[in-house]
Image (tube, rainbow, N blue to C red; front, side, top):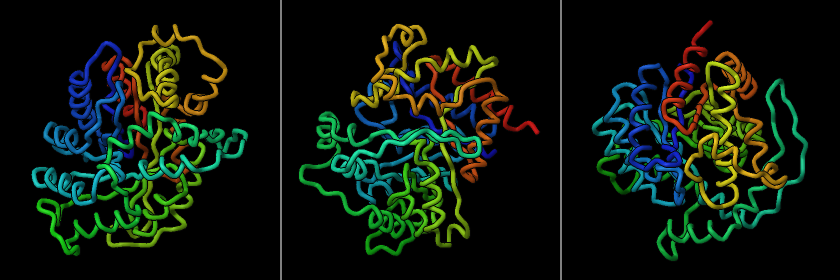
Length: 363
């Protein structure tokens, strides 16, 4: 199937990290049975509502609980660890589950530092491109300067450590895997991994992915305003490699599906409050119930903070969401789509993926 899953191992209000991890294992097994192509785990830190702080550990657990679905990271952040540690971690898992791992790599740590010194984006109006909503850009510079994030950055690296250039880090990962590095990663060297680059803009991530001939994942669900810029930059930079003869793109999307529109809207109603907790610098909160979300008193500033994410979440009946996802795939030229669904109750999340898979496979 050309649909895959991105899981943050969300912790619901009233739940625990253990609950979230058990839910992840259960969802991965069900995703495999439904025919989803990949099951990727995110990397997030200092978030009370997210349990995926160590993706390699969680990937190992998911790989052990499944047998055929590809399992990977969406994404390991190279700003927080060395290429050698990443290759060793994934090489270790590949030694037991060969040929099933996707090593998705991101540079959010480096990007956050750059944004802290960047100028705010120019104001733009929302536009619709061949049926796909492209909202105004979110001002990441304000969030990047949040004192909480600056403090957290000091805990994610050793004191005085400096992150190398992202392109150099990717080259080191590839050399360690291929055995062309002066050092030898054991396990890791020769591992049968598919290396991906994740990116939210047309910047260095897209450029490096294209120039190295690697597959690229563009984040419509994180930064919908720049998804077209990201895939265009990747394709323009692409050079054929031993891995790929042509560009290969997966695009992410947030979605909530239910049997009827009203129920889907109810299940998705906490999403805005959850995004607000991230964009105010507090970190993802435990995912609220619809009742808890309804009790929040929204200011105009609150709504403006999250409007782009609410407007680009795909919510509705199976047929409606499947059709909107097909528009996303057509407009971006994506080879695959990566869907992330969060609801307060695990059963609703599982059901959303079931309904979507059924609708997606219908002629």
